[in-house]
Length: 532
Image 1 (cartoon, rainbow, N blue to C red):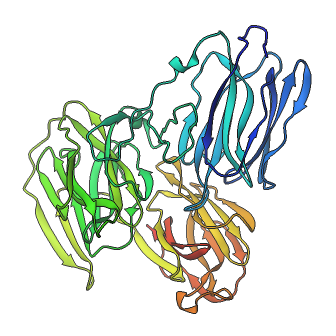
Image 2: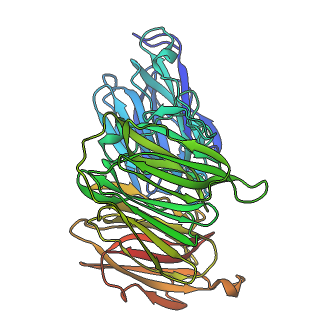
Image 3: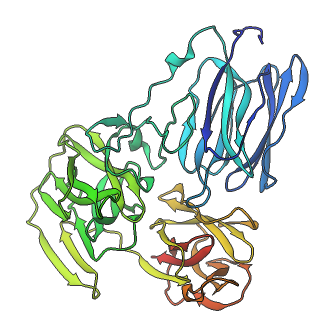
């Protein structure tokens, strides 16, 4: 097929997203006239109006019946045409299939969107001097993946325009990659074009060079993004590094990253640096299996600053690794995690280190907080932001634990409910920027509710609800969350679900809710809050 001013061939790019659903392909046309998008917590469905030699041709709807909001993009055909798309891919619920979570369209005249939730792995088509003449992908109840057919302006090999991916290393070598692209074929079906990750924490990410991660291939990928520096590190360990949480500096403000790893551990280490005069320069450690023929996880970590060494923390057994750079500042961490920290890597701003002032020698404080958990603090400089309070979780003991971590506030809550609360997903605020946590729970059934707060003027202060055992479930597990009600400084939202069973409330602890934690399986088994 040819089109005036264009070559007589097309190329297929993508699709980006997951492997689930049935494959679809609209074919190749002269151009795209209109796009109809249904979306909520993800892209529910999409439909296109094409132009075929002056006639209108509508595609089938790709996706399911769900639709919280519908947007229509009507292009000023024939002068306006699509040249690029971008978006995000991730699971809607923990352990669920990868879906297209957001989409943005760009024409030769303007941008449209974003539509959906900008959460997960970012993808895009670089500008190629061509136009989009068709779409393909996979779909089921949602839009699982999407790709495009491109018609180039000139007859040429467009593959030269696409940068080859750098390796996102998980085998423990020292290979580094730039933070603007890396290979994610283990996670997503990236098709013919590189998937580009662009964490939206702050502008430092584009300047940082990323090393690692080192460790095993288990768990799921995490990435805190890039900040100004590191103020404090908190580790839990028990034969290996169970979890890690970082307090970063973001242009003079203390900002806590999410807790990455599991909920166990008999020892908690807190390392406080005298930032900004003391900066983290590199890390070393060991990774290996905790059981015979088990998966590799991070066994120990040691931290080096421009002043001294901290650690080792954990057991120095297995294969050693090092970030091997003394000429920069560590400004972020990434890796893989589930029940342990499976692997870890760093984002580094390379360059000469700043001149620092002399500071006194550190001292150590050791205190026993319970019969099993011991806290060890390495105090260099105080973090201005107080540690949040933890309340809950309330509910049953089934499922697996999760923890979103601590943020500045809560902006939106997505719930699915039926006989119980199936899943929950929260949009947080982190110093003025939106951050979507992963969805917790299971299933795509039930009704869908979105709660949007007038943040920052409206803040979430408490949550209450009911939990009970479902028919046929193990009574010893304590049940699942049956209903939830949310209270802000301005209004009450809910109840969502059935108010039957055992009542719980967070109002015994006063404060502003800045994060959630709990347990999930096929349902939301338990829920708790972080308060400041």
